[in-house]
Amino acid sequence: MMIELHSYLKGEWVRGRGDVHAAALVNPASEDVLANVSTDGIDFKSALTYARDRGGASLRRMTFASRGELLRAMSRAIHAHRDELITTAIANGGNTRSDAKFDIDGASGTLAAYADIGVELGDTNVIADGESVQLGRGARLFGAHMFVPRDGVAVHINAFNFPAWGLAEKAAVALLAGVPVISKPATSTALVAEQIVRIFTNEKLIPDGAFSFIAGGTGDLLGMLTGQDILAFTGSSTTAASLRGGKAILTNSVRTNVEADSLNSAVLGPDVEAGSDVMNLFINDVVRDMTQKTGQKCTAIRRVYVPSAMLDDVIGRISERLAAIRVGDPARDDVAMGPVATAQQLKDVSEGIVRATTECATVVCGGPKRIDGIGCGAAASGKGYFIEPTLLVNKSPSATDPIHTHEVFGPVATVMPYDGSSAHAAALVRAGDGGLVASVYSDDKEFLKSLIVAVAPYHGRITIGSSKVASQAIPPGTVLPSMVHGGPGRAGGGEELGGRRGLAFYMQRVAIQGDRALLVTVRGG
Image 1 (cartoon, rainbow, N blue to C red):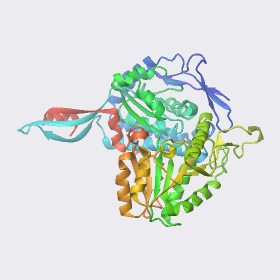
Image 2: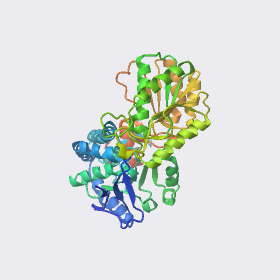
Image 3: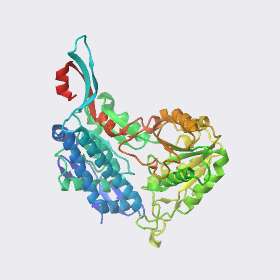
Image 4: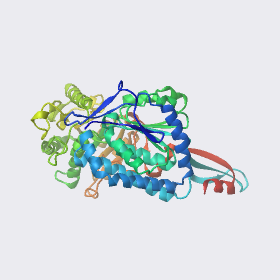
């Protein structure tokens, strides 16, 4: 049954007037319409004021410990409704059950992690930043720094691929910092996000005005942001550039964080032997990132670099694994990969493969054509946004190839050779011009050190796969709340999470000078 999505603003659920700009949400496996949504006529100005005045005031009165308990309640609520959220994610996102769990458990886990940080920070609402410094000749006049919550609202614009995790990871940090949130998910997969917010509101978990939700377009909202407000965006670099160029953003110096395109890389060291634990870890990570969430992860491996002498062996291992991937109805237990999320995604992925194969690469397995999904039935023939996992090879990589300049956001990766030296591998990795994560697989300490130092300025995170951690390694595509998430250049130049580090984005660092005893009273240390 088709439903109408609503926004949650000023403490109530509302829907836009009329259907002029209404958008439809579909099941990407069947193309059936699941819901409609519109924000036409919604008063975003009063919604902003309500969030700043009511929500902000309530959160700033709370301590970090009490805000942490708020996050813990949100985490538990998501977990309690896990099964129904998984069902919605399968229908609206094209997720397999495993993919849906990855998103929803990531949401509850991140909220729980920041709840623990709230406990650690304790019964205060400011954070002392570093040690105090003596400013004069005597022992009285000192200077110090501290963080305090900003007086504005945090507007979160999230991507279609992680409607639960994206909502929760941004909200967890902002709410713990004491800043109210207006969360806007990508419209195409907003059913999960709306369902989560309804859980929060039904159980009355969040102070009035502290959490708002927009289902659909943001209208003139961004044009009304002020210098105390914050904007955090996850999505394409094209949209990010448009947002950053907004008059209010530029004029009012709205603090902005962007997570955009990322041509993440995986480098296999020349010391790795066929059949070793490190080789198996490398192959597993590449195949997982190509197929988990149908390759629609900002952290997915897109570029795979292997020593020239190992190229054919690695291609054979990856393609053998991909050939066993069953693509089809994500609700079926025997299906390992579902469709991409939208018709536009299917078009973009197909065109990206064609561009790569026209200019520099050849297809090893898969290809740009849409396929019928397994288990969808004869009536669904020709429907659904299904495409095979596609492995490409570029045997003579150049920094100007589209492999290094254009992200195909789907189940696609390209294997490329390098000459076995860390210098050549680093040059190819740096051609991506900034990424969220790079992964390196080796036990050679000198190779690892020289490569990591060379590529570190271009990345927000680097993971090392070695024999000693192979059995317990966390996949590079998994974003951890304790580690920084973001990256320079093409990746948007942003930085999120990182434990306590994430709070700084939502708070104002201020220097205070005066009598040492008074500084201790104000900032607590």
